[in-house]
Image 1 (cartoon, one colour):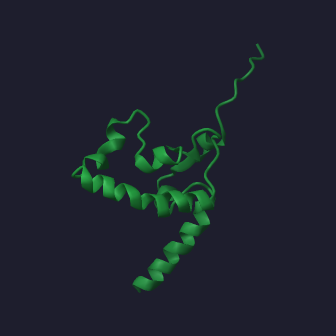
Image 2 (image 1 turned 180 degrees about the vertical axis):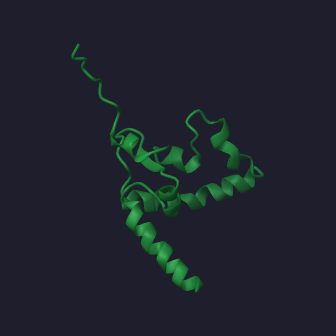
Image 3 (image 1 turned 90 degrees about the horizontal axis):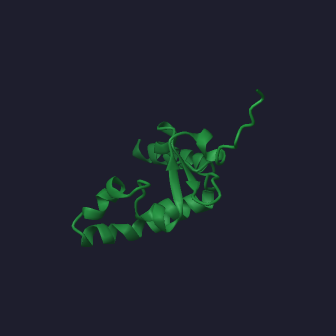
Length: 108
């Protein structure tokens, strides 16, 4: 049963990663976007950021006795180490990920 759940989660993760989401972020309506381009991260960058790069901060957290675990609470953009290193920002809903809001012309 655990193997089936693991395979299901992996398929779900591969399906949502192209939209800048993990399964948990999908459930919470969160999207990871590029800090400069304001576009959701693709599958490759999500894998790099949440898979490979996510291992390195574990050592930093252990060396600081867990203090860096709380870094998003004092950071002005609520970013952790992985988010900072990969220039990514987590937004609350997917409509924010389409880009900076355009200025609207008034037709008064």
